[in-house]
Amino acid sequence: MIVLKAPQDKVLAALQSVAGIVERRHTLPILANVLIRKTGGQLQLTTSDLEIQIRTTAELGGDEGNFTTTIGARKLIDILRTMPTDQTVSLESSAAKLVLKGGKSRFTLQSLPAEDFPLVQEAANFGPVFSVPQKTLKDLLGQVSFAMAVHDIRYYLNGILFVAEGKQLSLVATDGHR
Image (cartoon, rainbow, N blue to C red):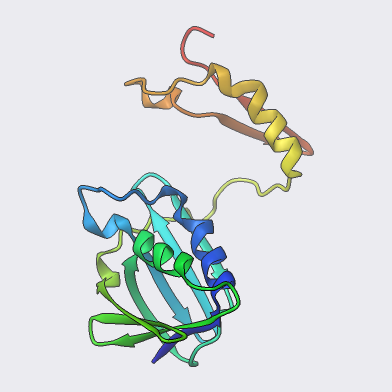
């Protein structure tokens, strides 16, 4: 099955948008992977570090049908970076491996079962939904992030509280002193 078939730059952009939390060394090897879930023409890429989960959806061609696996995120990004940006690349499934093809290049990559990938449980009725311009959110975070604890054993101080009431969004942070 052809999992994806698209220009190198589109595949790389989708991968880079979720790869920010993937580290090269983990206690669990599956955390170095990206979960690839294909449903029809949609391809969903998910990464996790057990605390944060990042997910993006893209239409990157390939065969119709459903397919799920995991593959080393950094390895895939490193290979894609070596290819020309205008080149069409394809990712094909073959047993427990994925074959990445582009031009005259062919790479066989080991995959791990998707069932082993740790997904963050999503809340059914998760609080209010709001939309904030990126600059406004950046400014708000800049105003309170200095007071946030970083490695405190009181884990509830290691974050920022978002309070949405009507059309007002308030952010609160403290390290127990500020």
